[in-house]
Image 1 (cartoon, rainbow, N blue to C red):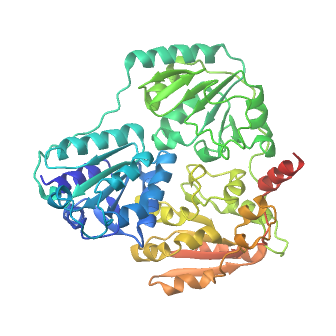
Image 2: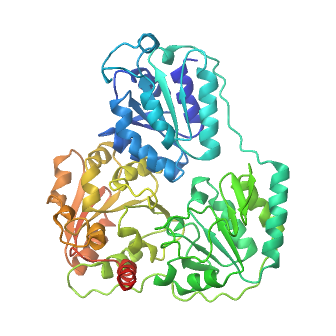
Image 3: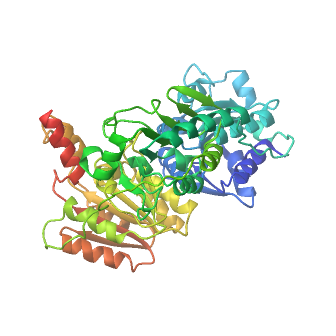
Length: 540
């Protein structure tokens, strides 16, 4: 099998049946392999950054993703997207078509290069933002492809592979190697014994779930663990949606002192915190507001676990949760949860604001929806929402690259076309990547896109010394006119009041096409949680 054919077939075996990117003369042979494979499809994007974001959204939804770019100019345009995937454990393969081996060996000055060529400079640039890199030759191609796929599967992080034009056509052994995640049995047994002893002796245990559960595809195993142990459970913001809101031991998302009092109280009083898949960052934990860190208690990660600073390496989350479910005794704890979510929204026929937007969206969401939430203040609005069952929530809370959510929605829609997809973005973020909605229309996907127009970077305004500083202003766009520039079938609407927003959402539910909705709020309008945080910061 030719090298590029082998690589594509290996990706298909992982479930990557759509591959994003842009063409360039150095990657044509890779694209031909994608087109020639009956089970793979090429998804060309508007630019390489968007393609990387789309592959990220695809991987969040389907498990793994891939993006193809060309040497130098293409791969560097995509590097920020890959860095975001690395930060948040999104397994995306960055595939780069590079010049011929002969050109590399003779260090020829050909296009997309510096005046003094270094054909390995861009591989070096990628090394800090991927788990591993590979530069293929005719001699190492088979071994290196198998190696980087194994690393991507086991770490659930991006990898980078550069393929010279001529190496693509070289024939290698076509036997596909399937990576295996096998825990060290002795280490696994030791961890389960130590962890279950601590948990079983505790009187007020609490489970905190987070996003690495999603990354390692352990949602169902995690739910079984939670339901078996009957331990009260909460989640950080990035873990929203992992446990159904109606589960009787669910305390709601952890919002520190800003909401869901039961979650805060239980975590402050617990004698045994069990963190599963945590990303213990500032925004995800409301400024590290817990009285303990992730290594002070029991923490279960993707391929290792920790008990009070002792690391148990080479054990996988899926095996840990399965074994713990059989070793931990079910608890009989009285749990007083209180009211979760927002109260039903009331129409007052007044200027649209966060006070109405998020409660109304809570009513709008349906089971199995696929949500993409842009960074900034918007995640705070969603943090207090009570979600229907099996809603898949995607945010980029740690990396926080504005503009990510729009192309990521394209990737998510292509990965799971049967789900209703909803994108909620601010207009400042949307401006960076809005052209990708033309690709949504081209591909026939039908997300509901809600663009919150509040006249600039509101999150930056509230953090600035002077909220009206001109650097927080942006160019004015008529967003509702934007889809008309592109070819495709789309339903467009606007809303400035709560009554109009209510009507628009009801109409959107009736559409069988992409919906693009622009909503207007005041410059300094904030979700309740954000307002409380800012008030507390000012007092301090």
